[in-house]
Length: 192
Ligand code: AP5
Ligand code: MG
Image 1 (cartoon, rainbow, N blue to C red):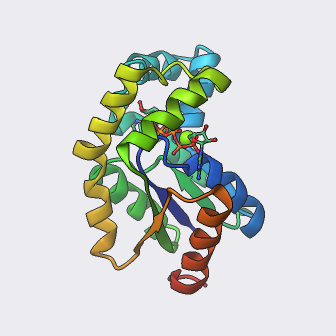
Image 2: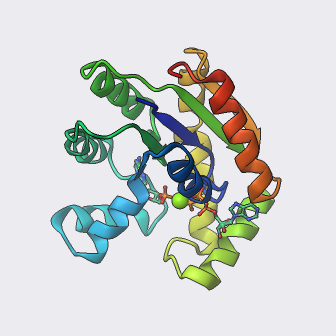
Image 3: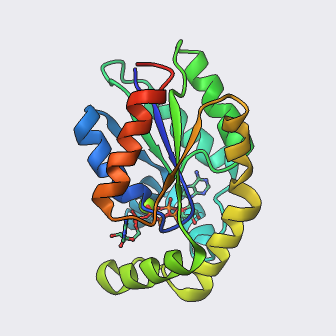
């Protein structure tokens, strides 16, 4: 099983690169942001909880996100996942490791997309005019970046200590980023 963790700040290209990776390696895409937005659109009880946080650019509480993920692991036919936007806190990373360990699986590699703050803001404001995502508004974007630095960045140290984290220059074209991401997976994954 190939389990790839795609990591980086809001607007770094996680969703864009995930789409290519799932095709290239024949994997399932697991984006907690996409799942939560679907719950909001369907106005489920979970969606109502999530909306309160997403609208402010804050993280949805760990226990909510972790129990949501646990339910998705049951399909045994799955070849592996591209994790996009999860884990976002150290408790989420520990919960994910335990979930995988219980199934004799592991995170094979974390690829980190590095992009400057100025470029992140430019991309997300541009996306707002194309896709109309509600949280792509300047003051919310700025809070999302702050939340990333304060609460999510420690997840990088967690995987660096496991020798699994590799950084890629996310400021290049989409094709160039993809090439670098694949290079890291093909050469440094702990599972292949
Ligand atoms: P989530 O949906 O995960 O959003 P995010 O992390 O803020 O990241 P984005 O989806 O905005 O950016 P991306 O990195 O996917 O970039 P993209 O490829 O789209 O989370 C949203 C919210 O949900 C959170 O704030 C939180 O409230 C909640 N949430 C989600 N997961 C959670 C969790 N685990 N725990 C708690 N709460 C959680 O690219 C952005 C734009 O740039 C696009 O327009 C794209 O076309 C363009 N672009 C991409 N690559 C390039 C390139 N190389 N050059 C130029 N443009 C590019
Ligand atoms: Mg995304």
